[in-house]
Image (cartoon, rainbow, N blue to C red; front, side, top):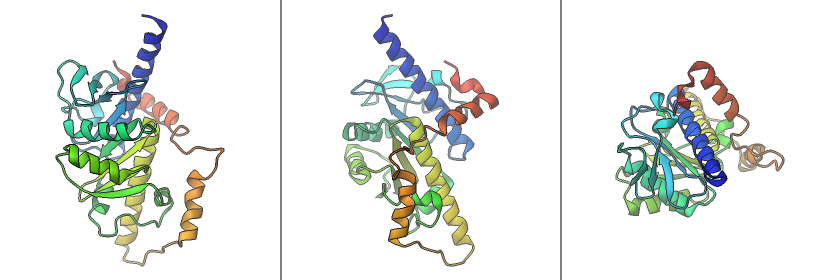
Amino acid sequence: MNKKSECTSKSENSLQIDMAAGFRWLDKLGMSDLTAGSIVARLPGASNELFTHPHDCHFDEICAGDIVKTDFEANVIDGSNRRVNFAAVNPAAHVFRARPDVNVIIHAHARSVMAVSGLAEGLRFVSEPAFAFYKGLAYIDADFHFDDDYCATVVSALGDGKALIYRNHSFATVGKTVAEAMLNAYLLDQACEIQLRMQASGDKLLQPTEAQLQHHYEAFYGNPKYIYDGSLEWPGMLRRLDREDSSFRNT
């Protein structure tokens, strides 16, 4: 193996480990749904290849060695003949083509986000994690077929944002890395859960002004010395998995 191919192999293995860890964390955070949902990642240095997971796996059992390589049309390249989910691969491929800054897309079924996805007002910017979505959150009507026309609509709705709520369904988040997409998923789940608890109290929600929302948003993304992209949190999340069950690293 030459140095270039060795480097590629290491970067792909590292990505597979991160993806497996992401699946384990989605399960730990209550965002798994039997075999439904996905993490899809663009292969490092590849123009039309990606990693996805076998459609018959539950999130709590996925290991690095389970991750399957396909092309953007969901044809399996490396991963035996394991079944993959076209409805996971196709929207991800469309997003990757349109967004060179995005390498990972997560689609999960967090109950809190599923609940908010059916509310007419959607997410309210009334809590700290919700402030992170003052900009970069979009909505789209759900369509479970994920054909090319719908995936083009997904790309258009997402724009240059970081999260998309499928009305009456759930959500997708994107990022440059698994860590960033996971952090966005975590914050969106938190924001929706807190909102539902507030609304359950029956009290009136305290709505910040636009100026206050912009100020809060800049606390997340306005400091050029700190990029809020999950890179600070992710190593500790890996360490916790290693302490509790390191099988996610199995190849």
